[in-house]
Image (cartoon, rainbow, N blue to C red; front, top):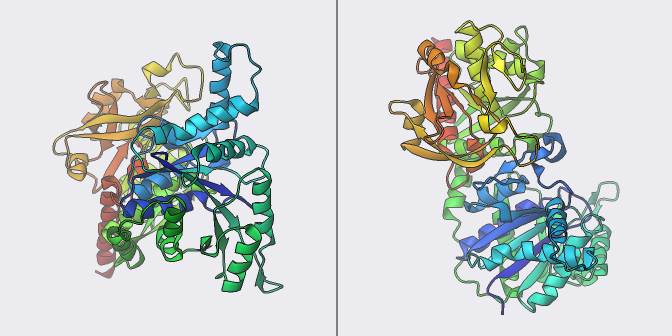
Length: 544
């Protein structure tokens, strides 16, 4: 019997059904029963990682402590489980083929013809089992991206088929997530797409052990019986996943449906104790029953796709619940902000976050936004590029360095207050070459950052090539923008803040990557609190 049990989550009928949320919810329930669980994502695209993808293509790129640029689903895994992920938790087809080709070039296959089976499938199986072989986990859940029947997913499905056979009885199961659509004209739910999806999976040699059905309407007992009969699963293994008002409801929905119970039965594992979701439910109670409400502007250039800023949006949910505040996030496209329109777009906001990003598009709108927040004492948080825009705005409008810029946007600027990091100047490849992963940051005494964190040194995750130019540090600080956080090894400025402003802070790192339900990020918690205070003062002034 294997020490580690494996659960494979596949999808059918259509994409975007929420395999990641189902996987994270099941892992949460297993964790709440006392099992050590983790999740990994297998992505079928040929990019080596999502690091070079435009956010419009694949949503945000999530970064782990060890510097992996990964799929945004890993963010869900961490937010639900409060367990850190790593390079081993995200595998792409590009990485698989790259590894196999490198082995072939080194002669490791002894002159054999390199083929999808067995070489690619063996590589996939090895990657799947890295986490299981570590000895850290009782259960590894593997989510396979895409839908069954996709050409890109076939090697993964074949690898799972082989691995299920190798693992033996009770050591691996397959959960298949499908859609049961509702036809309003007929007034009924239709099971045929799910039947076809399961049939396609079986043609690949894999039998679904559990069926999770996404639906807008409750599944009747008759319909569940029909799905069980025609999809060759037990009646109790037909699980309903009805639309939820928040993704954080899904673990409780899955608990009521018995997903964790039937999973443990099929893995021949004891149920142990009833899942302890007391803290989770307390979070949900605060989230759904807030005492206050604030509106915070998210100013960025990828706002048309919410997944572009997924971790930021979820961080506001965590911080809002912590403060018993409903945070209404109003997205503002920075490309359409100028000095004439800015007042109408952001003057009503209780707080402003200028988001991360790359490239020149929409930059001037972000700089105008920073200026408005600074001059009107609106709570401001700048993340990564947002922090750099705060430095540029201050240099231009307070120091009078007209044309101050980042060399990313204007290589020949006379005042490069933001410049390419020294170690980046010889880099030519774009993929996986930025400053990535968790780095130390020392916080200065008597600073807002030190008050917020309550610690002398913190670790935060990075994803950038450009940095605060130390040449201008003395000049900028003398004018009032203080560098209050820095890397103790390199001296790189990590945090800037305006002590004369009620709440104004910019950070070079990405705090949103570390916010979880169990541990809302202190920077977001403090920002939401400041926005609430600003709103109360604004309301009082209006009434007076």
